[in-house]
Image (cartoon, rainbow, N blue to C red; front, top):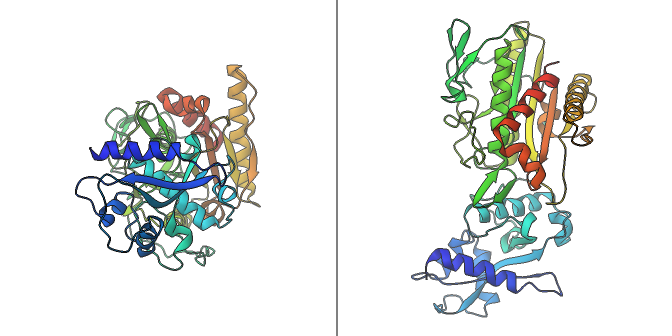
Length: 419
């Protein structure tokens, strides 16, 4: 039997054996031809923790090193919980946020690796690998996980030294052709950018799409397509940046993909080749990733400030992930105490509300709130954090899948963010 069939069989067996009493059971599978215990665990990315190996032998009532039977079904050191539609922490009754993030990222990896067909928010089956809650201080840098040190607390930003790097190091070279500017980063269909006016001349805009690189963000499977938050947020970010440039603004993309460009497809291919501005690799560790982004923004901010440029703004674009039945409008967040941040959020919300009224479909319910978000709190320029909707909801998906809708989102963000 092929490896693919074994994966499907494993998922089906887990679906059939959910324990009604405790709301959890072990994931099970059979050996693929040529596998031993270590290779079997490697298939589920469990072999790098010795406690997983010990647990595998224990739950299958085997002695370490015992030979395995090709035709026998084995329990894996992964428990499957019935998701409670609230959160990972309330589902398993353990309220450690760091561990919950590890669980979330492992479940994302299961889906991208095609071990699971559906994300846990859809099939309500949350897979918890043994090592996350049971291996003490034994830590490995597993590819599918974001490891965060609990004691790694964010420090307040310090004014960085002025860099000698080029100001445009985060985008490909810009060449002027009369009324047009060529920016290859936007892709072959959009690289020729017509300059409309200089309304935003002398103003700097930092645009960051959420996640990227090793972290795809929220995910959903639609038909046979896996959709990743970072791809759709990035496409909206590029469209927004292009429009700002058309009106004379200076744009820095804090996260960029060297070859995606603006895409008009419904289903955007998930990849991991995104980089940070300056061609820097994106760290797997979440805290390092956030710190790097803040450092890039702040370094550029102070460089421009020395040159006398006062109007600088930052926007972080995300797509939320909630239960399938929850339809969300775009929501806007700012750092508590930031007057400019509040103004940007309020202006942008007003634009979205106006556009909804013009369409006449339904009442707009998006909100403006202050939130203690790392990149918003510690970035030097005033910041606007945007959640564009729920990637799991069928109606919200229309907002992201259609390229014309992504362009509308970018246009509306432009109108409010640059006001």
